[in-house]
Image 1 (cartoon, rainbow, N blue to C red):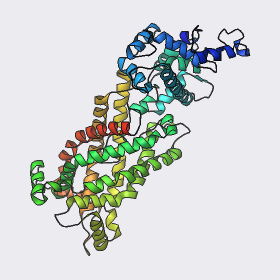
Image 2: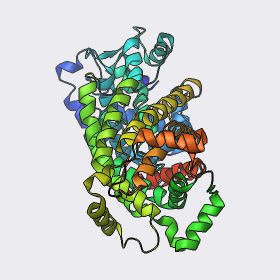
Image 3: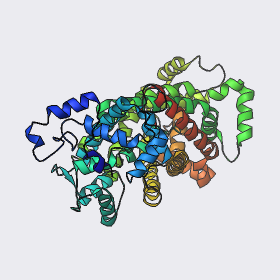
Image 4: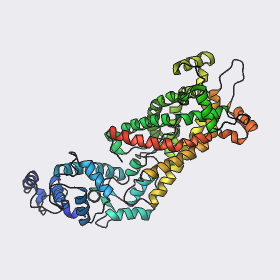
Length: 502
Protein backbone atom coordinates (compact mmCIF):
# COMPACT_ATOMS: atom_id res chain seq x y z
CA UNK A 1 0.00 0.00 0.00
CA UNK A 2 0.94 3.66 -0.27
CA UNK A 3 1.67 3.82 3.47
CA UNK A 4 4.64 1.46 3.05
CA UNK A 5 6.18 3.94 0.66
CA UNK A 6 5.39 6.98 2.77
CA UNK A 7 7.23 5.53 5.79
CA UNK A 8 10.46 4.69 3.99
CA UNK A 9 13.48 7.06 3.77
CA UNK A 10 14.97 7.80 0.34
CA UNK A 11 18.63 8.43 -0.34
CA UNK A 12 18.23 10.88 -3.20
CA UNK A 13 15.44 13.37 -2.60
CA UNK A 14 15.37 16.76 -4.35
CA UNK A 15 17.83 19.28 -2.85
CA UNK A 16 15.21 21.30 -1.01
CA UNK A 17 13.58 18.18 0.43
CA UNK A 18 16.99 16.82 1.53
CA UNK A 19 17.78 20.12 3.22
CA UNK A 20 14.49 19.99 5.07
CA UNK A 21 15.25 16.46 6.21
CA UNK A 22 18.76 17.34 7.44
CA UNK A 23 17.55 20.43 9.27
CA UNK A 24 15.00 18.35 11.14
CA UNK A 25 17.40 15.51 11.97
CA UNK A 26 18.41 17.09 15.26
CA UNK A 27 14.84 17.90 16.31
CA UNK A 28 13.05 15.95 19.05
CA UNK A 29 10.85 14.31 16.43
CA UNK A 30 13.87 12.42 15.08
CA UNK A 31 14.40 10.46 18.28
CA UNK A 32 13.62 6.82 17.46
CA UNK A 33 12.53 7.91 14.00
CA UNK A 34 15.24 7.82 11.26
CA UNK A 35 13.40 10.22 9.01
CA UNK A 36 12.71 12.78 11.74
CA UNK A 37 9.01 12.68 11.05
CA UNK A 38 9.43 14.27 7.62
CA UNK A 39 8.44 11.10 5.78
CA UNK A 40 6.05 9.54 8.27
CA UNK A 41 3.40 12.25 8.14
CA UNK A 42 5.61 14.96 9.70
CA UNK A 43 5.36 18.68 8.92
CA UNK A 44 7.43 18.35 5.74
CA UNK A 45 5.34 16.33 3.33
CA UNK A 46 7.64 17.03 0.38
CA UNK A 47 10.09 14.22 1.18
CA UNK A 48 7.46 11.51 1.42
CA UNK A 49 5.90 12.75 -1.82
CA UNK A 50 9.32 12.55 -3.55
CA UNK A 51 9.62 8.98 -2.29
CA UNK A 52 6.24 8.11 -3.74
CA UNK A 53 7.04 9.91 -7.01
CA UNK A 54 10.18 7.79 -7.47
CA UNK A 55 8.21 4.60 -6.88
CA UNK A 56 5.61 5.57 -9.46
CA UNK A 57 8.06 6.88 -12.11
CA UNK A 58 8.46 3.46 -13.73
CA UNK A 59 10.48 4.51 -16.79
CA UNK A 60 12.61 7.04 -14.81
CA UNK A 61 11.96 9.94 -17.19
CA UNK A 62 10.98 12.44 -14.48
CA UNK A 63 7.29 12.42 -15.38
CA UNK A 64 4.20 10.38 -14.54
CA UNK A 65 1.93 9.42 -17.41
CA UNK A 66 -1.22 7.27 -17.19
CA UNK A 67 0.82 4.10 -17.89
CA UNK A 68 3.36 4.96 -15.15
CA UNK A 69 0.57 5.45 -12.63
CA UNK A 70 -1.15 2.20 -13.66
CA UNK A 71 2.02 0.09 -13.33
CA UNK A 72 3.38 1.88 -10.24
CA UNK A 73 0.13 1.76 -8.29
CA UNK A 74 -0.40 -1.89 -9.23
CA UNK A 75 3.00 -2.68 -7.71
CA UNK A 76 1.86 -0.93 -4.53
CA UNK A 77 -1.32 -2.99 -4.40
CA UNK A 78 -3.63 -0.23 -5.66
CA UNK A 79 -5.83 -0.87 -8.69
CA UNK A 80 -7.34 2.10 -10.49
CA UNK A 81 -9.21 2.22 -13.78
CA UNK A 82 -7.71 3.99 -16.79
CA UNK A 83 -10.44 6.63 -16.54
CA UNK A 84 -9.57 7.38 -12.91
CA UNK A 85 -5.86 7.65 -13.70
CA UNK A 86 -6.59 9.94 -16.62
CA UNK A 87 -8.55 12.21 -14.26
CA UNK A 88 -5.52 12.42 -11.96
CA UNK A 89 -3.20 13.43 -14.83
CA UNK A 90 -5.67 15.92 -16.29
CA UNK A 91 -6.30 17.52 -12.89
CA UNK A 92 -2.60 18.09 -12.15
CA UNK A 93 -1.13 18.62 -15.64
CA UNK A 94 -0.63 22.40 -15.69
CA UNK A 95 1.64 22.57 -18.77
CA UNK A 96 -0.59 20.16 -20.76
CA UNK A 97 2.25 17.82 -21.76
CA UNK A 98 0.27 14.70 -20.86
CA UNK A 99 2.24 13.83 -17.72
CA UNK A 100 2.98 15.09 -14.22
CA UNK A 101 6.45 16.30 -13.30
CA UNK A 102 7.40 16.38 -9.61
CA UNK A 103 6.15 19.93 -8.98
CA UNK A 104 2.80 19.17 -10.63
CA UNK A 105 2.58 15.91 -8.68
CA UNK A 106 3.22 17.73 -5.38
CA UNK A 107 0.69 20.46 -6.20
CA UNK A 108 -2.00 17.92 -7.14
CA UNK A 109 -1.51 15.79 -4.03
CA UNK A 110 -1.32 18.74 -1.63
CA UNK A 111 -4.53 20.16 -3.08
CA UNK A 112 -6.13 16.72 -2.98
CA UNK A 113 -5.03 16.22 0.63
CA UNK A 114 -6.79 19.43 1.65
CA UNK A 115 -10.01 18.14 0.07
CA UNK A 116 -9.61 14.79 1.82
CA UNK A 117 -9.20 16.56 5.18
CA UNK A 118 -12.46 18.46 4.58
CA UNK A 119 -14.21 15.18 3.81
CA UNK A 120 -12.68 13.46 6.86
CA UNK A 121 -13.90 16.25 9.13
CA UNK A 122 -17.41 16.11 7.67
CA UNK A 123 -17.56 12.34 8.33
CA UNK A 124 -16.12 12.55 11.83
CA UNK A 125 -19.42 13.35 13.56
CA UNK A 126 -18.01 12.78 17.06
CA UNK A 127 -14.95 15.00 16.45
CA UNK A 128 -12.68 12.37 18.00
CA UNK A 129 -10.30 12.06 15.04
CA UNK A 130 -11.66 8.65 14.03
CA UNK A 131 -14.43 7.35 11.76
CA UNK A 132 -16.42 4.26 12.75
CA UNK A 133 -19.13 2.22 11.03
CA UNK A 134 -21.97 4.18 12.64
CA UNK A 135 -20.56 7.49 11.36
CA UNK A 136 -20.30 6.11 7.82
CA UNK A 137 -23.90 4.86 8.01
CA UNK A 138 -25.07 8.25 9.36
CA UNK A 139 -23.26 10.21 6.64
CA UNK A 140 -24.73 8.07 3.88
CA UNK A 141 -28.17 8.20 5.49
CA UNK A 142 -27.95 12.01 5.49
CA UNK A 143 -27.39 11.80 1.73
CA UNK A 144 -30.37 9.48 1.30
CA UNK A 145 -28.29 6.31 0.85
CA UNK A 146 -29.22 3.40 3.12
CA UNK A 147 -26.60 0.72 3.81
CA UNK A 148 -26.43 -2.05 6.39
CA UNK A 149 -23.92 -2.17 9.24
CA UNK A 150 -22.19 -5.06 7.46
CA UNK A 151 -21.72 -2.91 4.36
CA UNK A 152 -20.35 -0.06 6.48
CA UNK A 153 -17.90 -2.46 8.16
CA UNK A 154 -16.81 -3.69 4.74
CA UNK A 155 -15.97 -0.10 3.76
CA UNK A 156 -14.04 0.30 7.03
CA UNK A 157 -12.04 -2.91 6.57
CA UNK A 158 -10.82 -1.76 3.16
CA UNK A 159 -9.10 1.24 4.82
CA UNK A 160 -8.40 -0.02 8.36
CA UNK A 161 -4.74 -1.14 8.60
CA UNK A 162 -4.43 -1.78 12.35
CA UNK A 163 -7.61 -3.81 12.88
CA UNK A 164 -9.30 -1.33 15.25
CA UNK A 165 -12.44 -1.07 13.03
CA UNK A 166 -12.00 2.69 13.03
CA UNK A 167 -10.15 4.93 10.56
CA UNK A 168 -7.85 7.70 11.70
CA UNK A 169 -6.64 10.57 9.50
CA UNK A 170 -3.44 8.84 8.36
CA UNK A 171 -5.31 5.71 7.26
CA UNK A 172 -7.88 7.82 5.44
CA UNK A 173 -5.23 9.93 3.70
CA UNK A 174 -3.00 7.01 2.70
CA UNK A 175 -5.93 5.08 1.23
CA UNK A 176 -7.41 7.94 -0.78
CA UNK A 177 -4.38 10.05 -1.67
CA UNK A 178 -4.07 8.62 -5.18
CA UNK A 179 -7.75 8.32 -5.94
CA UNK A 180 -9.32 11.04 -8.13
CA UNK A 181 -12.53 11.36 -6.08
CA UNK A 182 -13.50 11.72 -2.43
CA UNK A 183 -15.87 8.73 -2.08
CA UNK A 184 -18.90 9.72 0.03
CA UNK A 185 -19.31 13.41 -0.99
CA UNK A 186 -18.90 12.34 -4.62
CA UNK A 187 -22.48 11.03 -4.37
CA UNK A 188 -23.49 14.69 -4.06
CA UNK A 189 -21.07 15.69 -6.82
CA UNK A 190 -22.16 13.07 -9.34
CA UNK A 191 -25.88 12.82 -8.62
CA UNK A 192 -26.96 16.44 -9.01
CA UNK A 193 -30.46 16.48 -10.42
CA UNK A 194 -32.36 19.74 -10.07
CA UNK A 195 -29.40 21.88 -11.17
CA UNK A 196 -28.64 19.84 -14.29
CA UNK A 197 -32.02 18.82 -15.71
CA UNK A 198 -34.55 21.40 -16.88
CA UNK A 199 -37.87 20.17 -18.27
CA UNK A 200 -39.59 23.57 -18.11
CA UNK A 201 -41.18 23.12 -14.66
CA UNK A 202 -38.91 24.43 -11.90
CA UNK A 203 -40.70 22.59 -9.09
CA UNK A 204 -38.00 20.10 -8.12
CA UNK A 205 -36.20 20.04 -4.75
CA UNK A 206 -32.88 21.94 -5.02
CA UNK A 207 -29.62 19.99 -5.08
CA UNK A 208 -27.23 19.70 -2.15
CA UNK A 209 -23.69 21.09 -2.44
CA UNK A 210 -20.61 19.64 -0.78
CA UNK A 211 -18.57 21.45 1.90
CA UNK A 212 -15.83 22.01 -0.67
CA UNK A 213 -18.22 23.48 -3.25
CA UNK A 214 -19.56 25.92 -0.67
CA UNK A 215 -16.16 26.98 0.61
CA UNK A 216 -14.63 27.45 -2.86
CA UNK A 217 -17.65 29.30 -4.26
CA UNK A 218 -18.28 26.64 -6.91
CA UNK A 219 -21.98 26.49 -5.99
CA UNK A 220 -22.86 29.72 -7.81
CA UNK A 221 -21.03 28.50 -10.93
CA UNK A 222 -23.14 25.36 -10.84
CA UNK A 223 -26.28 27.51 -10.62
CA UNK A 224 -25.16 29.76 -13.50
CA UNK A 225 -24.36 26.70 -15.62
CA UNK A 226 -27.76 25.22 -14.73
CA UNK A 227 -29.51 28.48 -15.64
CA UNK A 228 -27.75 28.65 -19.01
CA UNK A 229 -28.56 25.01 -19.70
CA UNK A 230 -32.21 25.64 -18.83
CA UNK A 231 -32.38 28.62 -21.21
CA UNK A 232 -31.02 26.59 -24.14
CA UNK A 233 -33.16 23.56 -23.29
CA UNK A 234 -36.39 25.58 -23.01
CA UNK A 235 -35.69 27.41 -26.26
CA UNK A 236 -35.08 24.16 -28.15
CA UNK A 237 -38.28 22.55 -26.84
CA UNK A 238 -40.43 25.73 -26.89
CA UNK A 239 -42.63 24.60 -29.85
CA UNK A 240 -43.69 21.48 -27.90
CA UNK A 241 -44.29 23.58 -24.79
CA UNK A 242 -46.53 26.03 -26.67
CA UNK A 243 -48.45 23.14 -28.24
CA UNK A 244 -49.00 21.70 -24.76
CA UNK A 245 -50.45 25.03 -23.54
CA UNK A 246 -52.76 25.29 -26.58
CA UNK A 247 -54.02 21.74 -26.07
CA UNK A 248 -54.53 22.31 -22.33
CA UNK A 249 -56.69 25.39 -22.98
CA UNK A 250 -58.44 24.75 -26.31
CA UNK A 251 -58.61 20.96 -26.78
CA UNK A 252 -61.91 19.26 -25.93
CA UNK A 253 -64.17 16.47 -27.15
CA UNK A 254 -65.56 18.74 -29.84
CA UNK A 255 -62.13 20.20 -30.71
CA UNK A 256 -59.81 17.20 -30.64
CA UNK A 257 -56.37 18.69 -31.40
CA UNK A 258 -53.61 16.33 -32.48
CA UNK A 259 -49.88 17.05 -32.50
CA UNK A 260 -49.50 17.46 -36.26
CA UNK A 261 -52.74 19.45 -36.51
CA UNK A 262 -51.64 21.70 -33.66
CA UNK A 263 -48.31 22.54 -35.28
CA UNK A 264 -50.04 23.13 -38.62
CA UNK A 265 -52.55 25.48 -37.00
CA UNK A 266 -49.80 27.48 -35.25
CA UNK A 267 -47.71 27.88 -38.42
CA UNK A 268 -50.77 28.80 -40.52
CA UNK A 269 -51.81 31.47 -38.01
CA UNK A 270 -48.46 33.12 -37.32
CA UNK A 271 -45.69 31.47 -39.33
CA UNK A 272 -42.80 29.35 -38.03
CA UNK A 273 -41.75 32.14 -35.68
CA UNK A 274 -45.01 31.77 -33.74
CA UNK A 275 -43.85 28.36 -32.47
CA UNK A 276 -41.67 30.23 -29.95
CA UNK A 277 -44.37 32.53 -28.53
CA UNK A 278 -44.03 32.77 -24.75
CA UNK A 279 -40.47 31.45 -24.74
CA UNK A 280 -38.88 34.83 -23.99
CA UNK A 281 -40.56 35.27 -20.61
CA UNK A 282 -40.07 31.54 -19.89
CA UNK A 283 -36.29 31.98 -20.23
CA UNK A 284 -36.13 35.31 -18.40
CA UNK A 285 -37.80 33.91 -15.28
CA UNK A 286 -35.12 31.22 -14.82
CA UNK A 287 -32.60 33.57 -13.17
CA UNK A 288 -34.82 35.16 -10.49
CA UNK A 289 -36.62 31.90 -9.76
CA UNK A 290 -33.39 29.89 -9.33
CA UNK A 291 -31.75 32.57 -7.17
CA UNK A 292 -34.78 33.03 -4.88
CA UNK A 293 -35.27 29.27 -4.63
CA UNK A 294 -31.64 28.63 -3.67
CA UNK A 295 -31.58 31.38 -1.02
CA UNK A 296 -34.95 30.27 0.37
CA UNK A 297 -33.79 26.64 0.47
CA UNK A 298 -30.73 27.54 2.52
CA UNK A 299 -32.96 29.37 5.02
CA UNK A 300 -35.51 26.54 5.15
CA UNK A 301 -32.72 24.02 5.79
CA UNK A 302 -31.83 25.88 8.97
CA UNK A 303 -35.46 25.81 10.11
CA UNK A 304 -36.30 22.16 9.40
CA UNK A 305 -32.88 20.50 9.59
CA UNK A 306 -30.59 19.39 12.35
CA UNK A 307 -26.97 20.47 12.74
CA UNK A 308 -25.95 18.05 9.97
CA UNK A 309 -24.37 19.46 6.81
CA UNK A 310 -26.87 17.61 4.61
CA UNK A 311 -30.55 16.90 5.22
CA UNK A 312 -32.42 13.62 5.26
CA UNK A 313 -34.85 12.93 2.45
CA UNK A 314 -38.02 14.03 4.27
CA UNK A 315 -36.26 17.19 5.50
CA UNK A 316 -35.11 17.94 1.94
CA UNK A 317 -38.69 17.51 0.69
CA UNK A 318 -40.11 19.91 3.30
CA UNK A 319 -37.33 22.50 2.81
CA UNK A 320 -37.45 22.17 -0.98
CA UNK A 321 -41.25 22.45 -1.16
CA UNK A 322 -41.27 25.57 1.04
CA UNK A 323 -38.44 27.10 -1.01
CA UNK A 324 -40.34 26.28 -4.22
CA UNK A 325 -43.50 27.91 -2.85
CA UNK A 326 -41.57 31.08 -1.97
CA UNK A 327 -39.89 31.23 -5.38
CA UNK A 328 -43.13 30.54 -7.26
CA UNK A 329 -44.97 33.22 -5.26
CA UNK A 330 -42.26 35.74 -6.14
CA UNK A 331 -42.28 35.17 -9.89
CA UNK A 332 -45.88 33.96 -10.42
CA UNK A 333 -46.97 37.04 -12.44
CA UNK A 334 -44.33 35.97 -14.98
CA UNK A 335 -46.01 32.54 -15.19
CA UNK A 336 -49.32 34.20 -16.08
CA UNK A 337 -47.56 36.37 -18.67
CA UNK A 338 -45.92 33.29 -20.19
CA UNK A 339 -49.32 31.59 -20.64
CA UNK A 340 -50.97 34.70 -22.11
CA UNK A 341 -48.03 35.28 -24.50
CA UNK A 342 -48.14 31.64 -25.65
CA UNK A 343 -51.87 31.88 -26.38
CA UNK A 344 -51.85 35.30 -28.07
CA UNK A 345 -52.96 35.86 -31.64
CA UNK A 346 -50.77 37.58 -34.21
CA UNK A 347 -50.67 41.32 -33.48
CA UNK A 348 -52.56 41.03 -30.18
CA UNK A 349 -49.62 42.31 -28.12
CA UNK A 350 -46.49 44.17 -29.20
CA UNK A 351 -44.42 42.47 -26.50
CA UNK A 352 -44.23 41.30 -22.90
CA UNK A 353 -44.55 44.79 -21.39
CA UNK A 354 -47.55 45.60 -23.59
CA UNK A 355 -49.20 42.34 -22.52
CA UNK A 356 -48.59 43.11 -18.82
CA UNK A 357 -49.88 46.67 -19.22
CA UNK A 358 -53.13 45.55 -20.89
CA UNK A 359 -53.80 42.82 -18.30
CA UNK A 360 -53.25 45.34 -15.50
CA UNK A 361 -55.53 47.94 -17.13
CA UNK A 362 -58.42 45.57 -18.00
CA UNK A 363 -58.29 42.94 -15.23
CA UNK A 364 -56.37 44.44 -12.34
CA UNK A 365 -53.54 43.10 -10.20
CA UNK A 366 -55.50 39.98 -9.19
CA UNK A 367 -55.24 38.67 -12.76
CA UNK A 368 -51.51 38.11 -12.27
CA UNK A 369 -52.28 35.51 -9.58
CA UNK A 370 -54.90 33.45 -11.39
CA UNK A 371 -54.28 29.74 -10.89
CA UNK A 372 -52.02 30.43 -7.91
CA UNK A 373 -53.66 27.85 -5.61
CA UNK A 374 -53.46 24.83 -7.98
CA UNK A 375 -49.90 25.86 -8.80
CA UNK A 376 -48.91 25.81 -5.12
CA UNK A 377 -50.72 22.50 -4.54
CA UNK A 378 -48.89 20.99 -7.51
CA UNK A 379 -45.48 21.57 -5.91
CA UNK A 380 -45.89 18.80 -3.31
CA UNK A 381 -46.81 15.86 -5.60
CA UNK A 382 -44.32 16.96 -8.26
CA UNK A 383 -41.37 17.56 -5.93
CA UNK A 384 -42.20 14.61 -3.67
CA UNK A 385 -42.59 11.97 -6.37
CA UNK A 386 -39.68 13.32 -8.43
CA UNK A 387 -37.39 13.22 -5.37
CA UNK A 388 -38.63 9.80 -4.19
CA UNK A 389 -38.23 8.16 -7.61
CA UNK A 390 -34.82 9.73 -8.21
CA UNK A 391 -33.52 8.73 -4.77
CA UNK A 392 -34.86 5.18 -5.21
CA UNK A 393 -33.16 4.79 -8.59
CA UNK A 394 -29.96 6.34 -7.22
CA UNK A 395 -29.84 4.03 -4.20
CA UNK A 396 -30.59 0.97 -6.34
CA UNK A 397 -27.71 1.80 -8.69
CA UNK A 398 -25.29 2.59 -5.84
CA UNK A 399 -26.05 -0.66 -4.02
CA UNK A 400 -25.93 -2.93 -7.07
CA UNK A 401 -23.43 -1.42 -9.47
CA UNK A 402 -21.19 1.13 -7.67
CA UNK A 403 -17.79 -0.49 -7.08
CA UNK A 404 -14.92 2.01 -7.10
CA UNK A 405 -16.86 5.20 -7.77
CA UNK A 406 -20.29 6.76 -7.27
CA UNK A 407 -20.09 8.13 -10.84
CA UNK A 408 -23.12 6.63 -12.62
CA UNK A 409 -22.10 7.68 -16.12
CA UNK A 410 -24.05 9.84 -18.55
CA UNK A 411 -26.74 7.37 -19.62
CA UNK A 412 -27.67 6.22 -16.11
CA UNK A 413 -27.91 9.83 -14.92
CA UNK A 414 -30.05 10.85 -17.92
CA UNK A 415 -32.31 7.81 -17.49
CA UNK A 416 -32.85 8.49 -13.77
CA UNK A 417 -33.55 12.18 -14.40
CA UNK A 418 -35.98 11.42 -17.24
CA UNK A 419 -37.93 8.78 -15.31
CA UNK A 420 -38.21 10.82 -12.09
CA UNK A 421 -39.27 14.00 -13.95
CA UNK A 422 -41.85 12.09 -15.96
CA UNK A 423 -43.36 10.53 -12.82
CA UNK A 424 -43.46 13.90 -11.06
CA UNK A 425 -45.20 15.57 -14.00
CA UNK A 426 -47.70 12.73 -14.37
CA UNK A 427 -48.74 13.07 -10.71
CA UNK A 428 -49.18 16.85 -10.78
CA UNK A 429 -50.48 17.24 -14.37
CA UNK A 430 -54.22 17.72 -13.57
CA UNK A 431 -53.34 20.61 -11.24
CA UNK A 432 -51.03 22.08 -13.91
CA UNK A 433 -53.83 21.90 -16.51
CA UNK A 434 -56.34 23.63 -14.21
CA UNK A 435 -53.73 26.29 -13.40
CA UNK A 436 -53.13 26.97 -17.10
CA UNK A 437 -56.84 27.27 -17.88
CA UNK A 438 -57.34 29.69 -14.99
CA UNK A 439 -54.36 31.76 -16.15
CA UNK A 440 -55.75 31.88 -19.69
CA UNK A 441 -59.24 33.08 -18.80
CA UNK A 442 -59.45 36.85 -19.13
CA UNK A 443 -61.53 38.54 -16.44
CA UNK A 444 -64.78 39.95 -17.82
CA UNK A 445 -66.49 42.59 -15.72
CA UNK A 446 -69.60 41.17 -14.11
CA UNK A 447 -68.80 37.55 -14.99
CA UNK A 448 -68.49 35.00 -12.16
CA UNK A 449 -64.94 34.21 -11.08
CA UNK A 450 -63.84 30.71 -12.03
CA UNK A 451 -62.52 28.73 -9.06
CA UNK A 452 -60.27 25.67 -8.99
CA UNK A 453 -62.99 23.32 -7.71
CA UNK A 454 -65.60 24.52 -10.20
CA UNK A 455 -63.15 24.11 -13.08
CA UNK A 456 -62.28 20.56 -11.95
CA UNK A 457 -66.00 19.68 -11.82
CA UNK A 458 -66.65 21.25 -15.23
CA UNK A 459 -63.78 19.32 -16.88
CA UNK A 460 -64.84 16.00 -15.32
CA UNK A 461 -68.49 16.58 -16.30
CA UNK A 462 -67.86 17.62 -19.91
CA UNK A 463 -64.67 15.72 -20.81
CA UNK A 464 -64.24 13.01 -18.20
CA UNK A 465 -61.02 12.13 -16.41
CA UNK A 466 -59.13 12.14 -19.71
CA UNK A 467 -59.82 15.88 -19.96
CA UNK A 468 -57.44 16.48 -17.04
CA UNK A 469 -54.56 15.14 -19.17
CA UNK A 470 -55.01 17.21 -22.35
CA UNK A 471 -51.59 18.10 -23.80
CA UNK A 472 -49.81 15.28 -21.98
CA UNK A 473 -48.35 13.82 -25.20
CA UNK A 474 -46.32 16.89 -26.27
CA UNK A 475 -45.37 17.43 -22.63
CA UNK A 476 -43.83 13.94 -22.42
CA UNK A 477 -42.30 14.29 -25.90
CA UNK A 478 -40.19 17.20 -24.71
CA UNK A 479 -38.83 15.49 -21.57
CA UNK A 480 -36.07 13.39 -23.18
CA UNK A 481 -34.74 16.15 -25.51
CA UNK A 482 -35.02 18.72 -22.67
CA UNK A 483 -33.07 16.52 -20.24
CA UNK A 484 -30.42 15.61 -22.84
CA UNK A 485 -29.90 19.17 -24.10
CA UNK A 486 -29.73 20.67 -20.60
CA UNK A 487 -27.17 18.03 -19.54
CA UNK A 488 -24.86 18.63 -22.54
CA UNK A 489 -25.04 22.43 -22.20
CA UNK A 490 -24.55 22.21 -18.42
CA UNK A 491 -21.38 20.13 -18.78
CA UNK A 492 -19.91 22.52 -21.37
CA UNK A 493 -20.78 25.62 -19.34
CA UNK A 494 -19.13 24.03 -16.28
CA UNK A 495 -15.88 23.76 -18.23
CA UNK A 496 -16.19 27.38 -19.42
CA UNK A 497 -16.81 28.60 -15.86
CA UNK A 498 -13.85 26.66 -14.48
CA UNK A 499 -15.82 24.01 -12.58
CA UNK A 500 -13.96 20.71 -12.45
CA UNK A 501 -15.68 18.43 -14.93
CA UNK A 502 -17.18 15.12 -14.03
